[in-house]
Length: 98
Image (cartoon, one colour):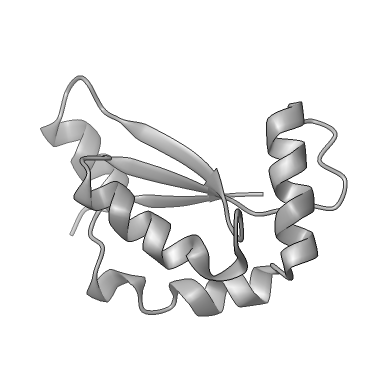
């Protein structure tokens, strides 16, 4: 069985829509719903940003979303708990970025 990313790029050669968002932003428990809605609306691949306390390599927008997500209580453990059953409702590739 091929992984979902390889399968996507082999079957859809152009016009791949990839979206990034920060886990836990704008609200702590929005992550799964955001993923489901993005897939429902035609997104091909989702990059989920893991908020970091010192995101100096990121631009100001991602820095602010990370700060807010951390204030909301997002953590790597919580994100994994939110995602543990995601394959029951979402089939597109998901990539964690940290």
